[in-house]
Length: 462
Ligand SMILES: *Cc1c(COP(=O)(O)O)cnc(C)c1O
Image 1 (cartoon, rainbow, N blue to C red):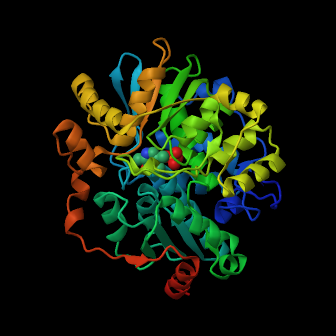
Image 2: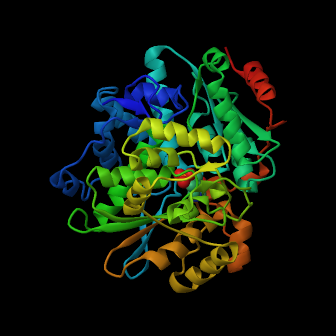
């Protein structure tokens, strides 16, 4: 299995190389050269298996021979052993034929743990074998950073630097990033918004002297290993609901497009997914683009679902690559136009996107109203990200097709909005009850490439 860049100018890599590299050297994102498929029998054979065994069978074709079966089974088992639910990704019913996929039982209470815990174990195994060490830099709108720090803390061959927008993450998110005491994980509060953080990380990767000097690696949602880890719960949930005999639809609260793109891969692998619905908050650039209005950056409006507050949706590049029939030249040109504000999508690519994705948006008021109404209707307390998706799912779902809505975070990660809508203060699970008493460790830093690079160089273990 080979991995190629969406922009066509970077070397082909194996799974392990693509994972350790993150962003391709031509600025593009790695994608599998061919998406492998599972037969109907293989999909039917997933019924009743553990989450871990499902993960092994779904991801194995992407991994090739980078890890032995025994190594890979061990990696998966260590990745998910810290989860607080035996099913890892349990389904809960909200209404007739409407299900919530709870993806928040990992150590940082958000779905990012599914990919990050796995990638931590994959990195550790690969680097130990190579006798190598790397520096991981990542930008976060809140949940990626804590998931990365939790997954990599204490590992001897990795330093982790996480950039988050100062003052724009929830207190629980911030504390999850500033309280790990392990010397190899570092929280950086940047004076800027999430797009600034993401842009500075991209700049570091494009500064080849720095990149090679500190052996920079990325675990942001652009990392193909993360996307592939997320393909698994589309299979586990759809099979629980009757796939491959029955079609299933999914609604996904979307920001960087990694999670929903994993759904596209599952569909291409042969999982009978009817609709893939992109749900956005008031930062609805993706919804507008999918409605045919082009992709044009504006200002980010801070919302109560902050992990979706973006203008530059990195993984959308992968969706465009496939919608443009794998034309990497066309993708490179669109991404060039994006630097100066935005681009229009060709008619052919719009048609391809329209065949794959539906979309909708929820305003702040609609998000709050959905938390309130869902509590009354089903007794479920839903975080604002999940509420955005439930609102959109209710508009889009068809009675005869099961709809799975992804609940990407635990309500206790966003207590202010949840309390405002429901009157209930959601408690953290007992295993995190002392989060507010732990000491915080963070460096406030300018939105400036030179300052960031100097700080990282000065703080890596060598
Ligand atoms: C990251 C995140 C999202 C958005 O996921 P993408 O893969 O970036 O589209 C949604 N909800 C929560 C809680 C998140 O942490």
